[in-house]
Amino acid sequence: MEVTHFFEMNSAKKPIGIFDSGIGGLTVFKEIRKILPGENLIYFGDTARVPYGNKSKETIIRYSKEITRFLVGSKVKMIVVACNTASSMALRTLRKEFELPVFGVIGPGAMSAYKKSNGGPVAVIGTAATIQSRAYSLAINNLNKTGEHIEIIEQACPLLVPLVEEGWVYSDVTAEVVRRYLKPVIEKKPSCLILGCTHYPIIKKLIVKEIGKTAVIIDSGKEVALELKRFLTKNNMLNKSGVKAAEHFFVSDAPEKFKILGENFLGKKIRNVKVIRDFFMIL
Image (cartoon, rainbow, N blue to C red):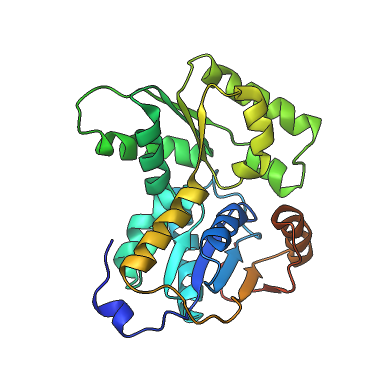
C-alpha cells in the first residue's frame, strides 16, 4: 500500500487509530508501541458488543464502520483493524469507503506464516467468524506462486475470547479449553500456528505449553506493527517530533474492567479510559 496525495496534506504527528472488539487488540497496541515508540496512539475497544466472532458479517461491517468514523473524527492518520474477525469481514469495505490507509492483521500474519512454513502444514486458530471466512487460507494460497499444495488446518476456538475478556487468563478452565481445541491441530503436526485472534497472545503461554516447540507461533500483532513501520518509513510519515508519545483509550462500556485487565496485560498504568456510547448503535 502506497500513499501519494493523502499524507502530503497531513501531519506525521497525528495519531494511529487502533480498534478491536475488546481488550484483545491491546496485543497489537503493545507491539506497535514497542516497534514505533514515537507514534501517538488512540485505541478503541468495543467492550459493549464483544465478542465479534459469533456475529454476522453485516453486523461486523456496521460496527467497524461506526468505530472507523469515530477514529477519523479523532484526526488519526491511519487505521489499524486490530481484530481478526473485523479484518476478515470488514477490511475491504473500510478501505473502499474511507480515504485514509487502513491496515488489517490477516495479511501480515499470512505472509509471515507462508515464509516460515517451508511448505509444511499451516494451522490457524481463531473465532468462528474468522475461521468460517477462510481469510487466512485464502491469503496464504494467494501468496503461493509455486503451485505446490499447502495444507491449511483451521480450528475455531469460540470460547477463548470470552475467557480472556473475563480475565481468566491463567485459570485451569482456560488451560483445559486450550488443550481440547488444540488436540486435533497438534495431531496434524503443523509447521506454523497462526494466532488468528488478537486475544490469543494474552494466553500464548498456555498455547505454547500444549503445542510445544514443534510449530512456529505467528503473532499477527507483531507482523502488522512491522508492516506499519515499513509503510511509515517509506512514505516519510514517521513521527520524529521527539515529544513523548501520547496514548488515549476509549471503550463503549465497562471502562474500569478494561482498565484493570489492560494494565495487567500492558504492565503499566492506563491513566484514563473514556466511554463513548452515543456514537454507536449498541443494540
